[in-house]
Amino acid sequence: MEKFFKLKEHGTNVKTEMMAGFTTFFTMAYIIFVNPSVLAASGMSWDGVFIATIIAAVVGTLIMALVANVPYAVAPGMGLNAFFTYTVCFSLGFVWQEALAMVFICGIINILITVTKVRKIIIKAIPKSLQLAIGGAIGLFIAYIGLKNAGFLNYLDTAAGLTAGADVVPALANFNNPGALVALAGLIIIVILMLLKVKGAMLWGILGSTVIAGLIGFIKFPSANELFANKMGAASEVAFSFFGNPGFGSLFATPGRILPVLLIIFAFSLSDTFDTVGTFIGTGRKSGIFDEKDEKALLESSGFKSKMDKALFADSIATSIGALAGTSNTTTYIESAAGIGVGGKTGLTSVFTAALFILCLPFAALFGLVPAQATAPALIIVGVLMAESFAGIKWGELEEALPAFLTVLFMAFAYNISYGIAAGFIFYCLSKIIKGKAKEVHPILYVATLLFILNFVVLALGVI
Image (tube, rainbow, N blue to C red; front, side, top):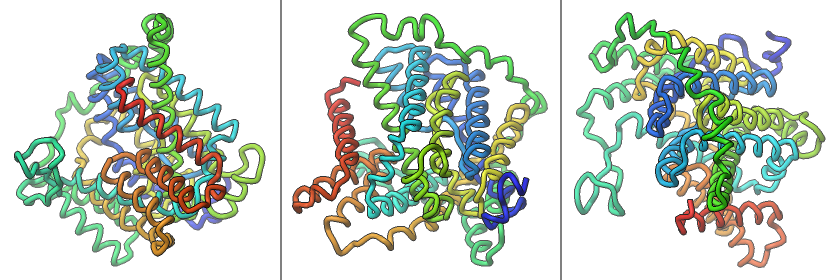
């Protein structure tokens, strides 16, 4: 184990990696219940997607661990699963088998752009100021997820009460519900333990607040039948389901469908690519997982010699594997930052995370006892830890500060990593052009910016 993961070289040990793996798992375990609920609305089997979600998470995370030796976990992505169900299936009328076929194609494209170094070139093209902004923005994004999951926020419409609209603003909750109190207790536990420099503070906070949730009756304990329910047979209801008609056999059956299909695949791929790149840049640099030596190998070496090369490849394979299992796009989880925050530095962290996902197959109801309110405080604290990167941005230079700030603003409040990166790219290019420094912008950044603009135009026209 020491020889394979090089624990001493990375300044870590088995105990730390185990705590990090457990922390990452508990902050993202919600996906095994949320993903089936989202995709089941498209007509898919809930039990089938439940198994597919776990399979995709286990395989993708183990590839990340054993190939790249980095502490990142992989699972079907939130947002992308909603796009799958509510846009592709509901709005555009594709059946779920056809949507899975498009996800599979997206995975193949991601593998190709990784093998052909397109992703590597994209990372090289992003200026330092935007990389720092992306890191801090992801921290704020994670913290905002934590605030929402904790129940610390209410959403008020200043014109008409609790409804959606342009006047909706977040407001602090009254802390009169058990969930918010559980999260508050967890936050206090983590803060106290971190200030006292207790190892595994986030994990202890998650477990402690879960115990509190049980004591006050906030969580429902499963019955014996629920605890040992066997759902494995449901895997066949969604796995390999797109090889036929409906699926590949019907996807391009009529000429009128070709353009929407291509645009959907493009949207899937663009979002998946920049979510992953943003996650690696945002969490890897500050933690030292991707250090200067690794970055140099990424940019200058041929083949897959750097850890980020291998991590990008592992991530790209995961989407196609997930589609084969029967779930929407699989991506590197930003919640991995929680495990990194407690000291996870190698793939052993991911091995422990994958092992817990495997245990969910026979004991899903047991792991489901950990409520979102118990894991939310860990995400808030991760946001604090990642805010350090803001210090490196030249806030006194508007052409650097404006794109950086808009990256942060749109990523957090549009609730989308890719949209934040898009805003940063667009206004960085615009700032440099206006200042007469257009040649300072890498050509790839211009290409990526035009693709983002095209994506927004397509969305505005309602083509997809």
